[in-house]
Amino acid sequence: MKPFIISISVACTLLFAACTPTNIAPAGGTGTTTGTAAATVTTTTTLTVKGKHITTTCGDTIVLKGVNYAAYGWGWNNSENLFPEIAKSGANSVRIVWYKTNSGPAYSNLALLDSAIGRCIRSKMIPIIELHDETCNNNGTSMVTTANWYTQTAVKNILIKYQKWLIINPLNEAGYVMWNGNNAAALNTFKTTYKTIITNLRNAGLNMPLMLDASDCGQHLSVWKTICTEMQTYDPKHNLIFSAHAYWSSYASTATAINTLLQDASTWNVPVVLGEVANKQDDNSGNCTLTLDLTTTLQKCEQYKIGWLAWVWTADNCGSRQMTTNGNFNTLTTYGNQIVNTSAYGLKFAKRAKCI
Picture 1 (cartoon, helix red, strand yellow):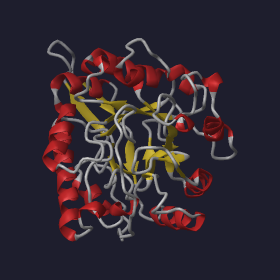
Picture 2 (picture 1 turned 30 degrees about the horizontal axis):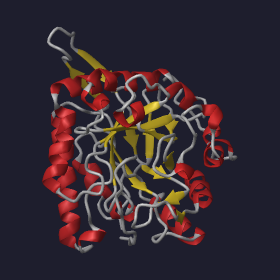
Picture 3 (picture 1 turned 135 degrees about the vertical axis):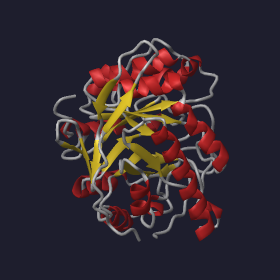
């Protein structure tokens, strides 16, 4: 989703593409790090992908069901700590908005990144760290450069510290295919860019799952259909999760279209997550005037065992798209109440990892 302050206009028509299901076994969920110069070398397991499932270090399978949260008030409140409030919802995961470069002072303080990830885990939720800098950008060079932030020693040491439970979502909503001609050349550019990012992060010793956003401001779920097997095979850890953001007012505006799309995705034999779901979508002027069929989306995710993360816990440019009015669980909005309490898909019915 767009940043809270900056308005980004998006168009929204997407196509189907066909991915041959794969049964690639994980190459191993271990990673070695020396941490700081004085640290002892340790080896820790990670979450791993097995076919269409995400498996924890305890051996149980988890379907990600959680929320998006721009920690520290979009970088402007170093003392904000809403993870205990989010945990009251039953969420088993939190996608944490972060920036490589932003005027919000929290984002330049890596101790705060460490704290946010640690507090999320202590609240019994899987942290998913993502960089928001490249939102709706189509510059492959910039995408790679931004994703290299994860490989910096100071950042990498934090990520490896928490690798047992951490998922990395390298970039938010970056790269175009549909909006760049929807041809083989556009698809190849998108694919090649992400292969470079995968290589760089794996070479840096980051072995945890990488959750990749779909093209075209994250909306084009079916972009993965033709390339998911190739991408999973390319990753030396075979540890990829494939994500899309369900702002589908033009692409899948009916219950039938949503069902067709998600039923198809459930057959790809790779983990599929809707990294952002919501009740409203911004129009081309940046106003949240477009109503989404959230009920059908979440019902079908429940039916097909597809994970999802609600946008957003608090502090959005669209008040009706906030789950809470001020970040506290006792201020759930109508939208938040639907996300949390509706049987059987609501967050309070989510299964948490056994030993987190």
